[in-house]
Length: 245
Image 1 (cartoon, one colour):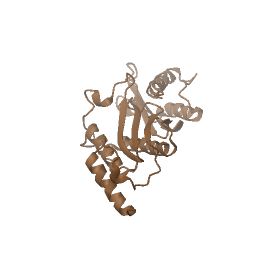
Image 2: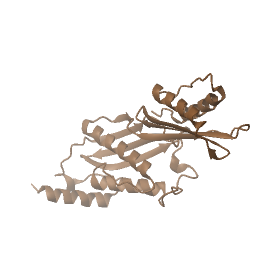
Image 3: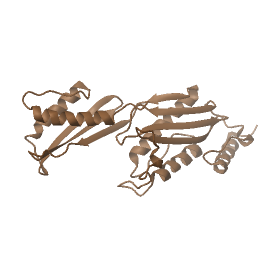
Image 4: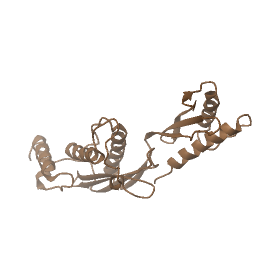
């Protein structure tokens, strides 16, 4: 029997020649894998802060990952890559989404591992891809073909319209780690100037939300108008934080 080193070299040669959608051939018969053959799909439980639900698909043939694909779909079901602004560069990076995903696909198949390298300027996409890929590899070891995961740390941020009377405007950010709220922050500005004293009202509202661990509207007899504006932001985040699968 050939040595394991020769088998690995042959495996890499096949992967480089076959590309992302290549199939297994006799040159890798000695490659040992704990992955079961099949097609594996992993979904995000919720839509992410940008309004996309994530789907990751992976195919295993003869114990080797031969193809992978990640889809980001909005609430209408449209793939992000089909939208007019889908391939624009990130504000803090120079890579396009299609190029970033293509690089992830190549790396995963080349390494036969979910250990991909994060892309500067696209760290959230990198982290999400890696989490989905790790889940898919785990499932491929047991033969579980479909799964929903909820291990993401996502921050949802919304801002109220400027109040026509007071000139105030509030921003609410809520971070979820899985289903748990791990941070709730609400700030207020009036005519573009931060209000610290008045902002304590909203800080109290945020603390109430954190303690309740829900996006349920709050009530305030002392500050009903402020509570109404705060609740409007809670509702916006609730709309963003919809279940995907």
